[in-house]
Length: 220
Length: 32
Image 1: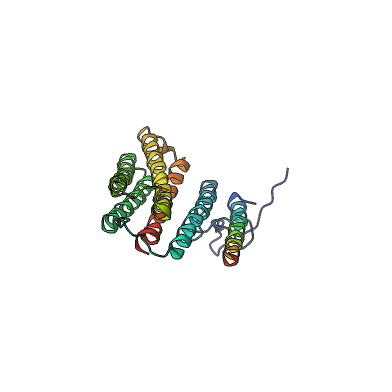
Image 2: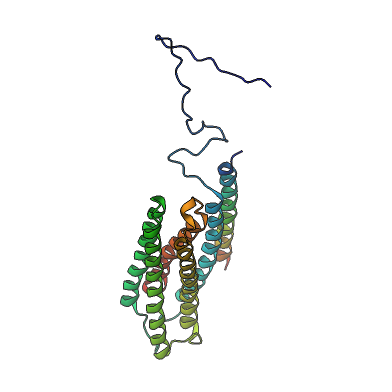
């Protein structure tokens, strides 16, 4: 077996300079990710697959809602309750705050601080649960005012679009709860953080989706 | 080929498919 050695020119003092550090790759297709080019690992790719599917799914729902909304003679229909814009607006801020808490949890993960990580995960999950509680309360009030799934296109589209998002928030809250429990068991201290990063990506997606739905359903 | 490069190729394919579906949906919507 032969090894190839590259001769480096000696300095004036006779020493051979050390080899240059790895640069992170050249411009070829096999280059390593540079500092400004985040690594696209399997976890991120899998979550992007999921998010692309979700985007198309919600795109279809919102498109159907807007088609029915535009073609309706009057919206909301007569004798149907108005949607709670103010309370839901405040609730939107609660959900956005949960995304900040999740970002802080990711920062705690980088700093290898498991205690803070668990606390911030629980805070994010708690804010998500608060969002769901307020949504549920508003739904009960709307049903009391007569807005049900059978109340024509108005009720059907509202409960379908908002309910589908609420189901996603429920899934995200459960996921964060399980992730926080794993973190409390010391799961992510060994650097294997794929499950937590996937959870954070999903959480940010669910939160980012809500303002779009809020504007489309409540404000337009 | 590194995992990162392979994943980026897959992502490009995914975005191409999603883009084609969005264009197709738009065209069908215009027809509708």
